[in-house]
Length: 356
Image: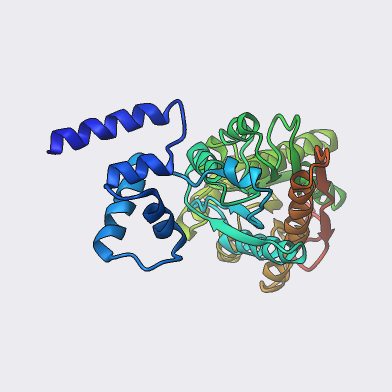
């Protein structure tokens, strides 16, 4: 009996590679009628617990998804947008959630609800959402430069918007902060204060290995403008823990003891860096200046209050919803929108100290 079941699963798996599984196939596999399968899926009628479990097992084994094509032919929409938020351990979750809330609020203004998908399923997750017909459109977050979800979007012609900018944005609708400009603002600010040796404390090495757009574009903008302004720079990634920040700080002072400017693009490293500077006898901003790339509330909570480069997370969510809605409505919505960053000067930066 087990051998027969396995053979059936293999046959259906092979069929799934060329065509979608139907309700009739699920019904045959479960030994019930097609209407029973429909009732289990919709919940419109009471079904015995044993039958429901048998149908659900068949759905899982065959990889059945509701037929999106049938829904389209019926002229119906789900009025749902899928928001795919892969919550990597190295991302700053409060910002991701702020964007997610902004997406939800903007979607409601269009009469849409949001399906939040936080598992890092990659291309398979995009295929699953597209095949299920659960959502009329998809918004992707945490976009990498060579994001492997994008070819699936293009192949399936999915209505989508990206919060982030891949290396090739051809035919896509994207909104993001202008991270290259943000990096350049940091270099300009410190150069204008007379600093010449500047350290950039970034995200964990894993973020750069997966080519996260926000990290790589910021670093590129900072490096390019630093070269134009004659700054001597060093980049040190860290995990954002006190220990990893201490290691990065120690290497910076060992390699560049004359460093007087620090740029931090790692929310977790800000507090440890300020503590380490105090422990080293370097007063901020008299002996060392610190610029952070972080949200305004975070910049305000430290002492001294941080000079920071920020961008409104709410605008990212709102613009992404507008872009995906244009695609759902059939408009030619190919667009790349980069939001201008803002540098606010506070107490953590000052003129470079004079050296003998």
